Length: 221
Figure 1 (spheres, one colour):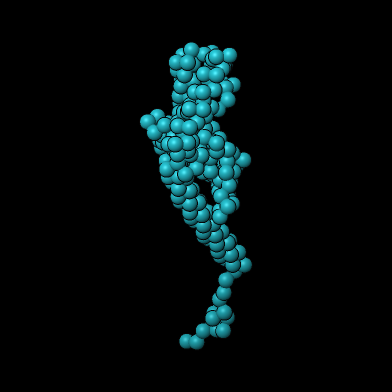
Figure 2: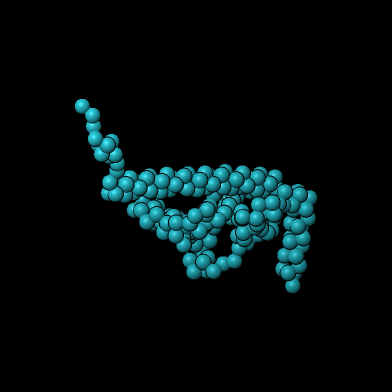
């Protein structure tokens, strides 16, 4: 029995073609999205690794007294070889707590999660407690401490240790919102006030002698 020619001419209907194209489009978009996410994650991981290396390098220079951290504190500094990255030195527990509170605020704004909100509340509480403790220790009103300018140790030495932190910032590859414009890496450590001043022992002693003479002269007047 022979089949008619029409029985061999069965094909796809228009609906089947449209469904196949829709499935292909969805699969392509999914794969493209996954690849984009992978590229962004890889770029951010690379940037964080670079930021860690920068922070480690700056901290090593601070501990060795190569740079004058007291003079550079609180200001972002650009790296000539990597202009997208900036670093900042923060000295003293209260200043570090304030900078960490700012970072916690950004994290809470970006994620909106309850965990980050609780972390922000705790960071703000820690900062406030340290401010109150300092006010009691120095016997000053809290408002005076809030408006007090940054101070530099006039008599640095090797025995006095200070808390120090290095913050490194870089622009996000794809910001999730306005609060997520910059990535941040922080490295904490300790250094002597002599190292933070960037002075040699002889220079520090000379400065100390000069301050003592000036104080004595003022006292005689």
